[in-house]
Length: 381
Image 1 (cartoon, rainbow, N blue to C red):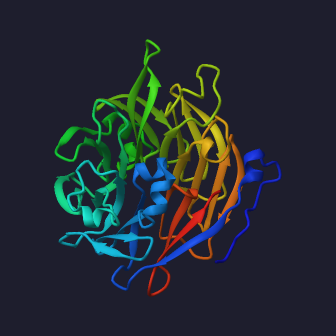
Image 2: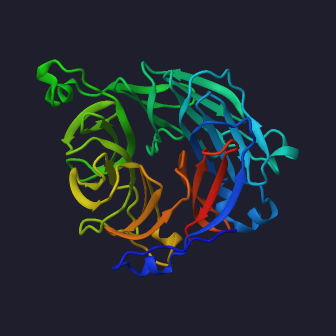
């Protein structure tokens, strides 16, 4: 197993000195899985909470892999593969994997092959929900899916957010659509080029669920939708209520707590801020409806993940940020500083982050450069 030592910034914090990034495991993909376009890594919550269970069931880490041919496969640590029911066709562009809402009905198999609930968005605008590996429901939006994320609203458990290339934002459940909205037409009228008759791109580049204080100071769940035009829109129950102009189009977002604030207790706060990565490589934090600069990266940002600080050190504090860029380098940041980097020896086709019961947080990267692709699991601790 090849080990790559962490590269730290000159002013790295204590957590940075503790990080040791190494290549943990490589899982070869079969020749039937080609042109990987999306990945979602998953381990059952009970395994994360009780590492003893993971030691007795070692094949519980699952990779949900989507391809440009429209196929979806489950790949386990031991190399076992399961191809899901799928008619094929449009490319799978977004994936989510989460604990199943249905009981595992085959005890003899579920003991070694747990199957997550899967949400898949494709290039035909279809959002398909899989339960126990079978198609459970399908929702269709007007244009190709461009964003997919979990909804944190406790009133609608198991719901998720979807956005498409036409500017449609929807909150969905596996059985129906809870609400659907269009990016505010006022945003389009304010976009550069709108008065000159140029064709505008209203695509929703990212969605995110976050808790922000309302006018009475009470934390309220909002949906953030980023437009490829360079605007960030806040929605409440499908109604646009606030629009923020960005210097560059946002490419990705995630919620958490990223900067210290005098108005909140970090030990009790959760998902009360959002971090935004844009096409210019800038990271911004949305706090109390205001944008705060966080960091400037070398390359455009393509994905963001937030991990609790306690996964790295025995203390509370702002979340650790995993920043994926349009390069072969992935950055680890904490409190506005780059504390570590990982440079792969290939250009990742898809990236995800998960937490293992026995190894803590890991990066999951797909190498599609060779005839037979591979999944690389890289430990962050």
